[in-house]
Image (cartoon, rainbow over all chains, first blue to last red; front, side, top):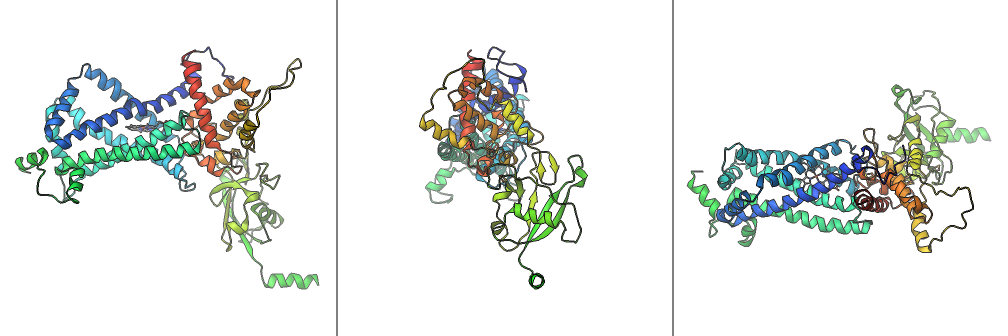
Length: 255
Length: 265
Ligand code: HEM
Ligand code: SF4
Ligand code: SF4
Ligand code: FES
């Protein structure tokens, strides 16, 4: 090992690369990727108040200036970098949670596992909507009915696609929340086990909230209901009011 | 007299300790890896080292084969030297403080393996040289030698002494590296022990003069950023060193150095 005290050496010198890449990976998970995910789930949740607000939000986004630059620069490239480098990191660990069954060691495993699930889910999700849009096969104004159709479809009575979305969103929410915890650790924001425990509670709640936000939207597209509405009317009773846009669409299109 | 005592012992075989030991004849003979089982007489307050001493006295496996005695390392026998780290019943710990009564209260077999993250020298003996090289890599010392009298060093507050003392208890035993999922043959992660030493020496008033050199060593490949936050290290450390606090404190210092040393200077 040579002596590395080159305060005056260039930033991107070879021996500094590994550290910079790790830091960039860690940062990219929070901003822009994590920040985008929150924004994305929030925008999608507008669907639970009907097609109009959802379509309006989609329209606003498609009409943002430099939308292609934003799409690639703030979402796709950082995501791709984070995901690929994340797979590389995950491959370099040796899981030992069967021997050392501490909760943090489980989290270590789950962070990697949820990352891989998120990878598969995001790839599928991008193919279904972004890919079809770029290929010119679907207009953004048709996202709403396409989502209704895909997420309410069942095979043998099982809504497979909705289940895949719930699992994918759960993986992303966990990965994001535990990732924020890790970020606070690896950037030296929480420097004692006490503060780390506190951070775990805070980010645990945040993760649950993020998951619920996504779940609610999936349930809306799958059933025409929202979880909040269902709870309002006393567990899962359907019928009476709340005929919303999605349900209307489903009945008109001979489903 | 002695004879009757002996035959009485044989007639009522006293409690036996059942050991399953992972063996390997030499560093360059990985093919000789194998398990061997031994049953040795129980002695009061026995620990794994004293059980291994019994094996050394009568190196005969349970299937009656005479074998070469098992090799292991131990020095202090009171959990301060760090020589006797082994994987006992699947978990790394000090053999000298692993009590047979706790491991096998009802005569269960006790499995003993060498640590897996270090090269095996023979049987349970491993080579921890990398840990000492890592200490050199991070300059885990205080430079005092010079060509002229430097005078008395700066004073250290009682408070800081109290904070530093637990960090100084590390005995380079390797348990934390063994349990760390990020330390393995496809990574060159330096591991928690050396990171903790960087915190220890960077806190010292004289040691702090070389703070940035130590930080830079941990901001190279295999440095502190490779920690995956599994926190096994702090759970297994026999000296109860707050390793996770040390890692995040050092992580904070490297973050500052990244921002104000590398980027803005
Ligand atoms: C798509 C596939 C993805 C893979 C394979 C992946 C993989 C990983 C891995 C292995 C880590 C752990 C790094 C470590 O602890 O050393 C990590 C951290 C993180 N990920 Fe991901 N990730 C993916 C997607 C995402 C997404 C979509 C988000 C945003 C919601 C995200 C946010 C984070 C955050 C915030 C961290 C914490 C950074 C840190 O440890 O300092 N990741 N990722
Ligand atoms: S916290 Fe870091 S150093 Fe400790 S066991 Fe986990 S990965 Fe290894
Ligand atoms: S930090 Fe603890 S476990 Fe690691 S080498 Fe030092 S004493 Fe052993
Ligand atoms: S013999 Fe020294 S720690 Fe066990």
